Length: 252
Image: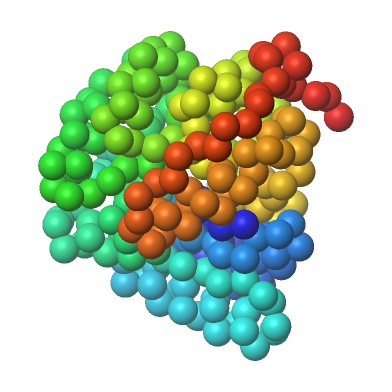
């Protein structure tokens, strides 16, 4: 699997504090079946990280992983707060893409009334970028106005859902909304959004299986993220049967 959204770099956001903590996340991810992690550290007003810092820490972590025989590669990226993007200069923004490709991971704010996201996405697209929306299922504004997400997806944006959302880790309402979005073809990727190796861990496979989405697992965790990293066209979703809303959730 390719984990497209993971806070694995040490000491620069609300993820791991030390490189040993980063290594623990990487080992847990490898055990779960991930072979590539994209280091999507926050770039926000609270965490004003820069591309050179992310690249340096990514390189240092990869050196440690190779030295310790962990079969996993970390690639640079960023999780860009919607409210921060307009203040990032063009040269810096071009270095904050996912794995060096044309896609940016944009985080909508956790607010009840969401304004400006569609304008921001349109502006980024006009500048040659593509946009992946981070955990839209957890955004109250998109929960209230699903039509905005539908319009963004129709315009070419992709939606990346957190695996834990499918397992109910963010509450029943988020779980139901996540599964509804999957059922209706509005989800293109499932990532861990890991922040630690035990709390908010880098697991994806079990959550997909638990949610009854095993038939889509390869597309959600391999085909789509690989195309994103390589800058290729996004492959069409396979024609597989998805359980009805009532049957889609299977409790532990």
